[in-house]
Length: 113
Length: 116
Image 1 (cartoon, rainbow over the protein chains, first blue to last red):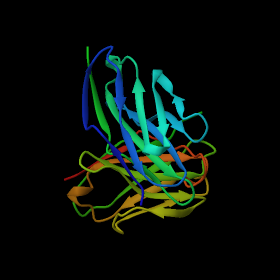
Image 2 (image 1 turned 135 degrees about the horizontal axis):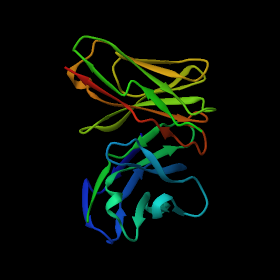
Image 3 (image 1 turned 180 degrees about the vertical axis):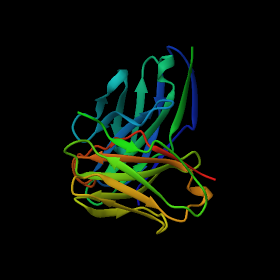
């Protein structure tokens, strides 16, 4: 069965710092990869997704993620975080044909003003 | 286009009762999945319905059940509620079954269930 791990449970950054949130999955086949964000009191929103093609994908609000197949990773990055990026971030994997969406445990990001 | 809607948004029940939650997917979406979100367990997949048929089921007891109607709306039922069922229940919709190539799930705001 596929699984998803996220490296950090809680990350605390100051505004303007760079962000990288790690995500690794365990599945050897073709995968679809997602990052979702859950702002306080709001519902899960899609940040970005990777299906195929360029392994560097850009999402909303200045976020990007890089798919490295050899490392089974899909890390999320943002060059300069803002206080409004405070939220919980979830990595999700969906293997093609026959698998469900599997979510990582989430990483809580706190950005200090 | 309207997003995924869930009703009710908040619910308080007592142990032993049953509860029914409702989800309306995005127009044109035929797949509805349900998740349970808790601080300790994160997001856990309950089941998925596509074209009125349950496609997949997660590792939850039979007290958790669901159904989907011909208009793609879905309901989830939990019988004989336990304290541990307190959680945020999320519904997500996608155009086709989530096992398909390139499907994306869009989430509703959730129903927060508190079992006393």
